[in-house]
Amino acid sequence: MMIVLIALGLSMDAFAVAVCIGLASQKVTLKKALTVGLYFGLFQAAMPLIGYLLATQFADRIAAFDHWIAFALLCFVGVKMIAESIRSKDEQVSEDASSVRPTAMLPLALATSIDALAVGISFAFLQVNIVTAVLGIGLITLALSMAGVKIGNAFGAKFRTKAEILGGVILILIGVKILSEHLV
Image (cartoon, rainbow, N blue to C red):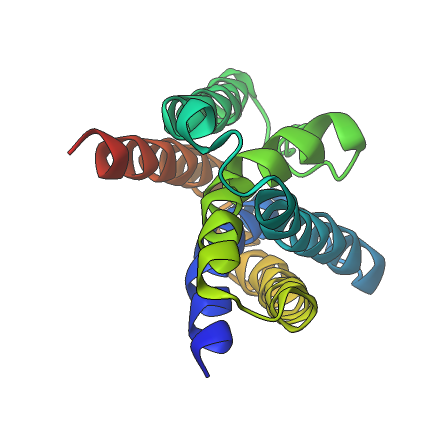
């Protein structure tokens, strides 16, 4: 049960970003939703595994700046989404805002999964079954991210430009949230 709750908590940032991708997408296919889900699910699963394997060796170094990396990546993508939606004269969605290309997805997947690295470090101290934890986190994030893309798209079709701006603002707010949690 603890792993499920941790997985749900870790997947919330990925879910929110997936909703933003859905908001900015003109059409969402199963392939697109699955691609987003796989990026987020794999990164959310890989980071605790990496943290678990590295355990305390690099904990102090990572904890000192992980929140800044997540903040910078999310703000960069969010500001870019807002700027492109404001620049757009027509109702077409900017390709980058809804893109599932690696150049668009890798920074998002990395930014939303950095906290999972610290969770993996704590798993080592708690003697958690890492295989069960990684599978649970990955699968729950995959499912919630796929749902997020579909949910975002259902609401985004009517409010395309405003939805893209909102998506950018949400990404920035997630970055601010991550940063503020670590600075307090």
